[in-house]
Length: 252
Image 1 (cartoon, helix red, strand yellow):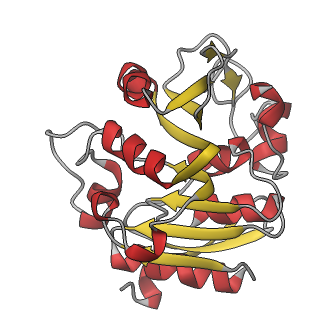
Image 2 (cartoon, rainbow, N blue to C red):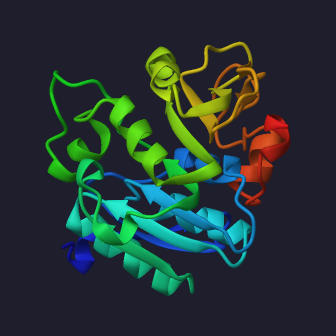
């Protein structure tokens, strides 16, 4: 578990959420907020967050959609503890279980209306982070197909998987969907206008039969480069990252 002097108290959604995160280790940022913004959850639905970390994505989703029944699965006990603490301090009910998605804890072996995930995306090999918790959170240990299969088993018929990943993982993700997930839509995430998308959000439906759709990129920053201290978010990104809005119309 993390000691108090190892933690920072961070604002998300312009202070609507306050999250404890390790000073050294994996720290949630825009990916968690964008993932939450793309999940089509409705009040009263159940949501499973695979690899929930300190709970950022689930809690951002709860800030937008009231009355959700949230559950999280986290491999690392220290982060699972932070997710519980962060849920409590933000007044959100969330059950967090420790475990491996290939050996799902028994309380999570049930159907959910939504599954969200932000899997590790740095390829194996190379030099891992010297901070073990960060290395585990960021470096691929299980293939993305294992994440998709675990999510599929937990989805009720007609329910949605929403996942954020590296853009280079798209072929692997699409091949992992068959035969049970369909109606897939991919939203590329570009840092600036004209830049290649390095990240993407994938949504797919259990039992869906609609054609695959590749959507226009969601651009996060204005201008060609960072310009001093000036706020550079596009209006669309600002509405999500600061205002806590959703990007659901982009998938319509």
